[in-house]
Length: 144
Image (cartoon, rainbow, N blue to C red):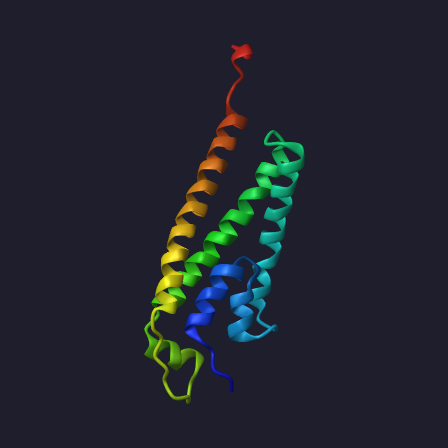
């Protein structure tokens, strides 16, 4: 059985977690949960590409784009959870029967970056979504 590094899992979740790469690293390509990350990330990416080409007034784009933001936020939260898991618990779950290894600053630095980026992504996604919702629901002044 191969060793699964907590540091590497944290950084994979940080860099490619929106595509489920951290799940594939830990559980293999047959992991169903890992494959569930891909559709919302691609739908959100489609929304972002539509918005870049058609502008912010495209309603389909602003309905699709937040999917990418929420998928990124979930992946960054996962990176935080991985990085903050105690070494002993990590080894019990992902490396049973192997000699324990102690991580150093790699996961901690990954957690710090994931917290920074996760806050930015989540708050931006919420702000954008709520703004577009209010613009869509607002009654135009000319109708009054």
